[in-house]
Image (tube, rainbow, N blue to C red; front, side, top):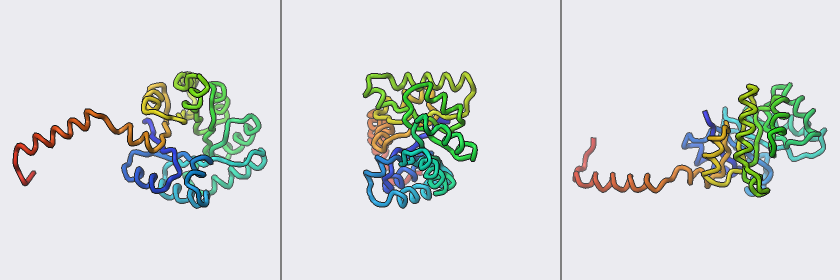
Length: 220
């Protein structure tokens, strides 16, 4: 099963999409928390409650390794469905390994190479998050990165899931899934866009016209 996560911290938006049943989780980060403003802890707590039993990734904001570890534990304690998001930094490897040993789910973010993903999978993390759009900004092929990570993980039977991030187009979503992503995290506008097709609209309009020809008031 490919899972769709929503990449936002906007509560009204999350409430709307949660009702559809389309979304299996949420990813947050300092950038999208800053966009909504207010108390970030309160926002995260609301998201955790809204998406009970579904993974909610919450990123550390400290940089010193000792403080990152302490903050990761505090983030984990916010709720049973929290996944602690930690950047792919060598200095954090010991921290990540320790957290995994405590059965804490980890999402390693800012993945830009297959070897980064492999090292983190060796540590036993739940997710690795390759950034597609940002790689393309650097004139590299983000979808090819997912293919390579997927090949490594499937060949060596890793349980770590590939969470495709920094998706900017519907084609990014589709191509990431075809390349082997287990999860795609999507900005809200792409949720709307991926569900639209001009032939769907045309078909609905034609059904309506044809139904009117029956001139019936009651059905069934």
